[in-house]
Image (cartoon, rainbow, N blue to C red):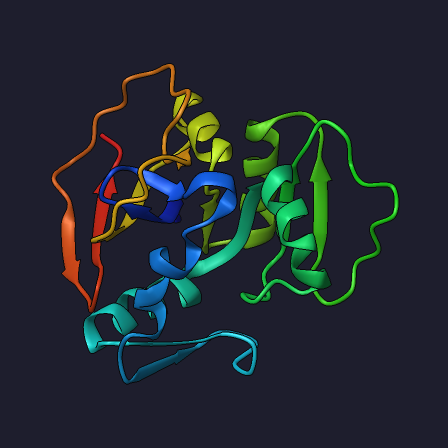
Length: 196
């Protein structure tokens, strides 16, 4: 059965970004800390270099994901990855107001104005039997609060950022999780939790 999962690199003190959108060099250093290559659909743009255990974890994500759901803040911060998401999957953007000047290029972007449940349902339809990735950021919180997330994947990085964007800020429910599956990488521990 396909999953709706969230996956994010997070610091030991629980942040997915540092103050004013900093700290990404530290949060994502694990992506190039090894020698085993895992290319995305755009290998010249993004090829992971990790240990074998992390490479298997990444292959599972890359091959098993059929669509993505993100928030407008991430879309704007990356400028929609200049029209071409590195995973090459359809992207559903949860927003109150779609951009008026956006023109799709390589990646199909759909702007969803009627909430997280609609965005996930549309992403599941596009993904077929494959999984749907959500977030990071407030979309993860919205999906957890709505009971729509089935798996939480944290790439726990041994750094602290002190402040910034918390992983689960604003969560209003108290979901429970199974004990994690643990995968040890270089400079990262991947924790895979199933939402109970």
